[in-house]
View (cartoon, rainbow, N blue to C red):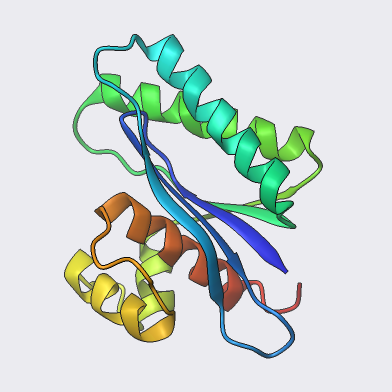
Length: 159
């Protein structure tokens, strides 16, 4: 089973592809923090992100797409833009007949650390113990995407 897991954004999008074979540990097949230039207008950024997601789907042929549910409490303009990216990713998954799953930040924290009040630092600390991460340094969004993928496998055990 392969999952494409995403931490949505429009400046930076965390993307990971994880695979889990019968009873084995999750393996990271691919991960990145895909960045779009702030000099591009939103429509250009939307297109670039969509093209990147489609390219990864074509290359890895995932069985599912898992995404972190949106949670905003400040900037409304940013929230609307990220929501548009989220909707586009959902559309891409569903139009490719790939099952779509979403997890709250609380679900991700509990799946990774066992504690819903865990900090990002706690999550990243545990991630490195749960799955082999080749990169010496990665941007938070990339780690968040990996965490969403592990959450998928922890919650959707019967798939």
